[in-house]
Length: 368
Image (cartoon, rainbow, N blue to C red; front, top):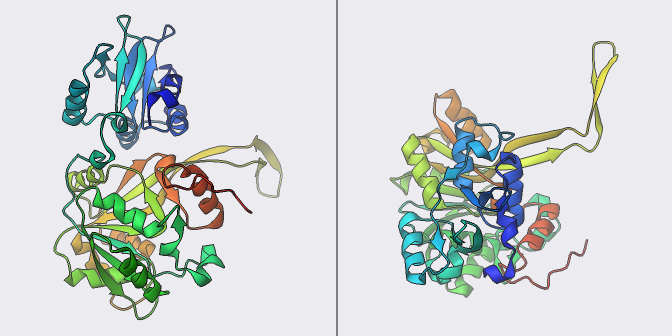
């Protein structure tokens, strides 16, 4: 997206705003980086989603000002920059954006990755060398009656099925072999991939009966010898998958869960009472922040040993069992906009609105 089509001011914030406010601004701006400026719009520092994630993992508060989180003296380029220099710096330092500044250190332009590289280089950050399993055996009851006809993995986003988009994102990281667990309308899923002639290799893990959200992973125990990525078939995670894998390995977690920040406001006054029903007070429209499980995980192969064979077993059962066995589970935080969930009608329509341009659904209109 060229900077001519978006306002620079969307990416400029005062250093006094809170981390929570910065996250909201990132969502609004559509990129995962902001730049803090002073009253004269002179550059003070940069703030990426990675900076926020590291702050949160260190138990930093979302209400703290970004002044405590900023990366001081960010990389900049002068207005007479050469594009080859910009490419070299962005590749070497893996930057999300480079501000172009004038002699007064004011930002006059911002170069983003897609501004200077072809789409084919969108993930020139390294390769992922572990298997990816996509859990696609469920009935998709939350999308009934849609899924009475079409299996959930084949729900369309533009001119592609959701499962194909998920696989395409991993394919950009060098993944060309996938395992898909199937049960409900399995033949339709197979037929779809036969028709599109996908450039990656697909193995099917067939469930004779519904095995829940984790039961089919038991079959992977004899198929893989490494860690593995696991994803639900109705989500898109817009994050750096290689960074997720590095986080998982560095922390040596048995399982890493990708968690998305979610902000909730209860649109009512909440009553606090004591025994007997006496009112102590009312909190008007309280707000809460949570890290929500997105449905994507990285897990060690040894974790699969905890799954019982040929039994209904959900991912929550695996998490509980892992914790009871003193296993370690990490959470890799991402911002709200980086998790696209189409698993229920309300979220499907919201996602279609958010994905209008990216997946060729320009003409989509909400019909409900």
